[in-house]
Image (cartoon, rainbow over all chains, first blue to last red; front, top):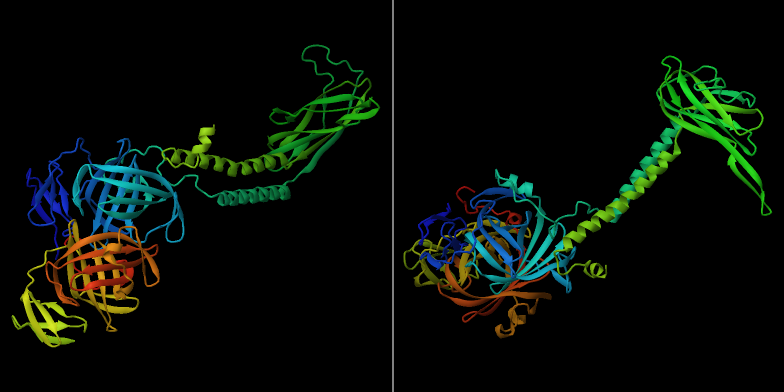
Amino acid sequence: MAKAIAFNCPNCGANLNITAVGHTISVACHSCGSVIDTANENYQILSKVRSKQTCIPYIPIGSRGKLSGTKFEVIGFMQRCDYTETYFWREYCLYNPYKGFYWLFEFDGHWSFFKTIKNKPSQLSIDEIQYLGEKTYKLFNSDRCKVNYVEGEFYWRVKVGDQSEIQDYIHPPYQISKEKARGETIWTYGKYIEARHIEKIFAIDQEPPRSQGVAPNQPSTYNQSNAEVWKMAWIYLGLVFLVLFARYSTAGNSLIHSESFTFEKSVPYSLSEGETKNNLLSQPFRIEGRTSNIKLTLKSDVNNEWLFADALLVNENSGKGIPIPVGVEFWHGRSGGENWREGKKKASTLAMSVPPGYYRLNILPSSSSRTSKRFGLYLYRDVPITSTFFWALCLVLLIPIWSAWRNNNFEHKRWSNSDFSPYWSVEEED
Amino acid sequence: MLKLACPSCGGEVNFRSKTSVFAVCTFCKSNLIRTDLDLETFGEMGELREDSSPIQLGTRGKFNGTWFDVVGRVKVSWSDGNWNEWYLYFEDGRAGWLADAAGEFAINFATDQHNAPALEAIATETSVELEKNTYTVSDIKEITCAGSEGELPFKALKGRKSTSVDLLDSDENFASIEYSEDEGILAFTGKYVELDSLNAQNLKQFEDW
């Protein structure tokens, strides 16, 4: 049975391991930073250059965890940076003897799981490639980068300062990277992973590095395609109509009381403060069923005048009143050789959430009429309100607009780190 | 199967494939060269250095519906690493290879090498046409045979030098060309495969895995 090899660092004596026996060509000592050549049994020191900065891997070397159904062990770790040393990212080498090598990348708290691919993506244009004849990937980044810190096992002779050329192409959550290093072109294919999964997979009792900004291949939270969003909007629209239909078909919309009154001009309007002499009181009536709305409609044959009923729906038992004022006005005439008319002889007011019980209407009428004026009051119960549905409709239509806006915002943020942003020219014009 | 006796130690030497002309004695590690029914000793191979390949002599697998046995191995090393070329004997009598480099596997077969370009005409990223398929050269390596075992179709002596060229295409097709002094140009084409897809049996066991 094949076993891992344990040996001591020839420089500092620290305990070191080789898990990928035969594959591991160099081991970087976690203690002194020496890189040891393990291609043969001599275990010669390749370099003693200690990196300027040390970097502690979030997933300790030797940790094991299951990714995509395969158990992997973290055997190597390196930090790399771009040539200007602005962006630093970390790469974990994962190993399984039956599956070979995979990589976990971490940049600004965003993680991706990568594997080497042996089918070369085809170049569609300078900034676009196609993989497996399916998805197209857009060039996001093209840079020279260098190794900044190393620790553990590598299947090549690793060295701080090693340089390579990298091109990243994205189709979130997927990413394809092309790396020219060690005289080879290596293509890797990866997928974005939520940081909390990493924490769980490797059972680490420490918060993962906080994710900042938007990663190149981070799936947009608002990434539903236009078609999907519209589909959703249509479903909601359907639901709104269904509710509307149900509301209309179950709505009582029944006339529960109607009564005629007369506004008496002869009665003095108000004798003194609190005087309610010309108040009109309706016959009592019963409101049945559940708590629902009430519509009060006023009809009067007003003619170049107005009539206003300051009505109060008073519960006979509790004495509580619900104000439900309603008024009509109608004007007409002739000016500039044309007839005009304005206003209506019929108007309604709604009162919401009226509980069942015995009620009366207490009405204080007023009018510009010079004579007495008759008016009719009609009380309807459980009236469907169309305007609610109109607003619901507007909100539904806002979904795709809002979603597109959010998505656009997200994409702007994503591409703000790229030299190949499709939004670039737009931003410059702004 | 051809059973012969090792001229050095008398141990049994098996040849499954008719195309095998070389073997390493399982018992005394002698290099044996076969000419028809004769075996000739050609020095000693010695022990192969331990590695983490899950494949071993005796591993069985299935490719495109045909079972194969792993009957030989060439361990190849280059300046920055090593890999294995496993020699396969298929049930239907064909012979093939299983390239095994750091967990990446490809089943491949010798193909007409006449279309292969001369080594001088090759550089990374150049296009090569093999069996009506266009490939791109991904890397060129100077390799040395680090040892071999089992039966093989050429004299896989330790220290044998050659140049290995790997080719990629946009599908999962594999191709490689080998340039060596003794065998000249050899071309191979095949398919990259996942180990799981081969229904592999009798794989090497790893402690703790």
